[in-house]
Image (tube, rainbow, N blue to C red; front, side, top):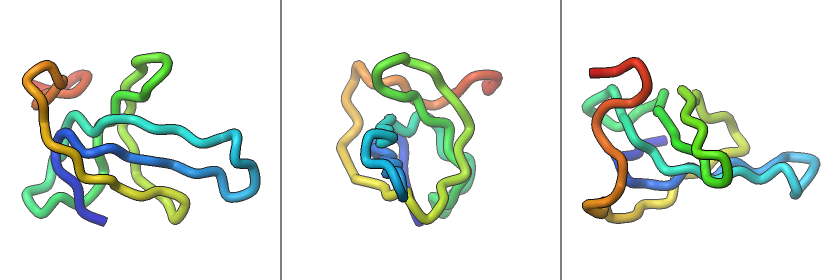
Length: 76
């Protein structure tokens, strides 16, 4: 899995479709785009460090000027 800041991380529930979560990747620590990623989740604006599992996928989206980027929580 590879991602860049501004991409969307989609996590689908393997057994329950209602557990789907979507968030925007705000920090990628590795130059090759590999996980983990800091993700700001839609709905509650909570940010967390995510190690995506087999139920996750990345959707590429361009970075907009109003998109949070760079430093995630506790980052500088």
